[in-house]
Image 1 (spheres, rainbow, N blue to C red):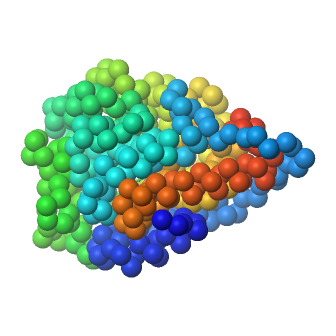
Image 2 (cartoon, helix red, strand yellow):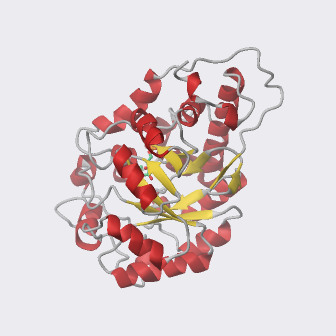
Length: 357
Ligand SMILES: Cc1cc2nc3c(=O)[nH]c(=O)nc-3n(C[C@H](O)[C@H](O)[C@H](O)COP(=O)(O)O)c2cc1C
């Protein structure tokens, strides 16, 4: 599948998907200010490129949590890939593996974690939502461990769901035959229709634990030996606390503008977070990463890796596994060009002076 750039994929996918599916994938909360801000903030930053650096031999390779990856571009956890293509998360896992990178599987996948782990030839990370039913949550963690996942990414910016008005209007629900697979056994597999609201918002309100607090990071760390990654941080003090509670990595994220509208653009807060925690914990960032130069900017300002959400869904919608693979490859190629043109033969050469000379 030929991809010119990731930005135009959204319009191409829109033509392929049912309205309620497209809207669920594309939307942000409320006025979608933060959704737009993520992109705008990247576009405002300039890269002060270095010249006359030998870039004839260069590599985009790096590591995350010690795992080698082709480039610092990971796949963000996004729910319900079964709405984009028949193979669902299996297609995504195969695409990420083929591209030499790591997928983070959402708690809300349409495919069981065991099957996704089997389809992956690179490490798999798992994103965790903590259910009020801690027994069911614990059982899920045990399954994730047994499946061989290499990290738990705990999402902390979603005590309830942000109000995505497009989903309210569409009364969003899972299409027939699709379930929250991992939770089917626990009795939490259905995102019901006929809600006076988004079906997913109702699911969250009734099942997800909105009492989650810092002590629950300790609970999770005692529960598992997997590294815990805390996703959804935009403040320096929260970054420090996450580190102090033993997080192995933090994800600077506003959930792609889908939770608190008015939350700052992630690339704008990254320098503050990086200042606060230095190298004591890995910093990953997501939200609006669409260009190779966006990846470069995030690395320059202190991120170890970035994650992409929606573009992978557009790839799945347009071409299944091949589509998702093409999306990751296209961004990796752009990143390689961005490195060459800014005088960076390696990821380690991408330093803060490229943004603040
Ligand atoms: C359709 C969709 C579903 C998502 N589902 C989840 C989820 O289940 N768990 C989670 O932690 N984040 C979820 N996210 C947030 C992403 O992990 C990520 O933070 C965001 O998509 C990054 O922004 P981008 O889409 O602009 O790349 C979802 C995002 C989208 C677009």
